[in-house]
Image (cartoon, rainbow, N blue to C red; front, side):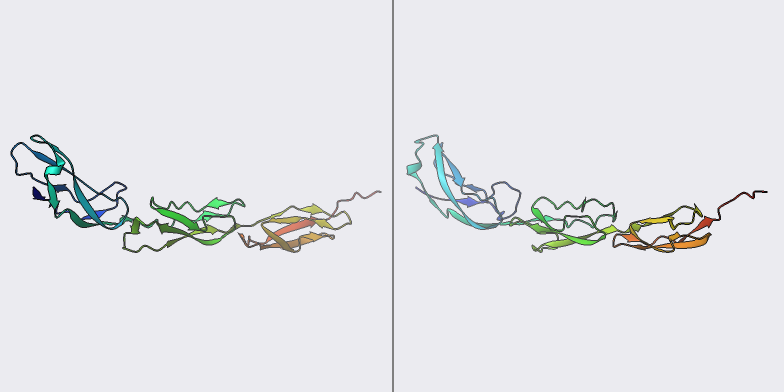
Length: 219
């Protein structure tokens, strides 16, 4: 006996990682006999055709061979699931060690670009959707999320000296190159500076003093 397959009205699905397809059923028209239908399904995003077939017949003669199906195929599609693009994280400060971007690409995308860095600067990490996902704006290409490592202030350190007849270095700079007058021989007041490297900003200049040496008068 020829029976028609009744397909469900939902033919557009969204990817969820599970097998999906329109529902399918068929009525035998024979009292006491139930036709059990199975149909092909798909999991990944794309356009497909589901094919229905008789898995079993219960009750009555209980023979699949007593029936044939008509209209046993149905087109359907599975669309990509949407994801939200991550936001740029708060800026980090230079530490001298490698730091991760702090950007988590959503499930269904792959991280790329610059995901960690050491030096001060602005970097771009990418998140690229797989074949089953898209961004909330409907695009499927990689998105670049910028993140930043800020410069920190260099440290200029000076200590006062007392005249001893030789040149004495009074200042050093962490995060840069010391300049100005950081060393002297004669008593006086001097000013040192620091030229920062690429990971630091310049500190304020500092003054330091070479004090005269105190000597006692012999009478």
